Image 1 (tube, rainbow, N blue to C red):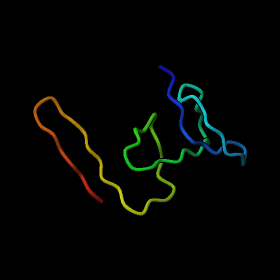
Image 2 (image 1 turned 180 degrees about the horizontal axis):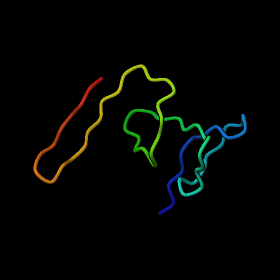
Image 3 (image 1 turned 60 degrees about the horizontal axis):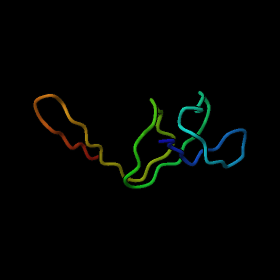
Image 4 (image 1 turned 135 degrees about the horizontal axis):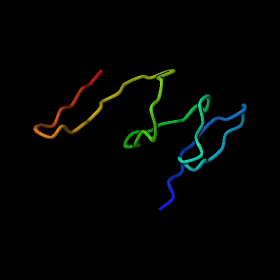
Length: 62
């Protein structure tokens, strides 16, 4: 299944396939969204990250 995400590329807003993301794209994440790649946070108001290790589940809120 193809995953698309709101993205700013070359100053234009687009819905891009996550496989087509390149360095320099700015992705727009909303609550419940999955991060499709390694990202650098530009701006954030509140974030809660859930990740699962082989042994335990951790929730980190910033």
